Length: 144
Image (cartoon, rainbow, N blue to C red; front, side, top):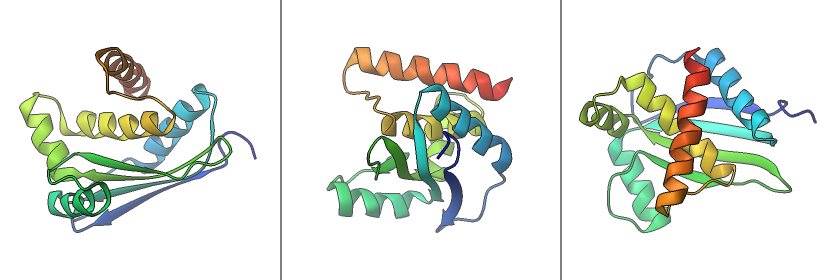
């Protein structure tokens, strides 16, 4: 298996389909994973509503609050495989709060989830800083 032989899928649950540049996003995600020296089997990105993700947060993580993303990591033997559940409503609200374009915020959330599966954390201030730097680096690649 070469570094980019995995499959990237997009799904929509409990929301209308949003316009995405799927080919560009797939190429970008592959580039990030390759740059990080990893391989992948599958990446499912599931866009959903706030309520859909809240129920998942309650049922799987026992958290009773809204969030923008939940990542399920199925990676084995250093082959990345994941489901990323992303609340489009939460991303939209967050983009307004921080005065950022919705698509840019959505891309940040996507890459944030990928970075988590690649082993990056954001618990401590130092980890958060590294995560943000990685997000910014990879967002810059996408925007060029």
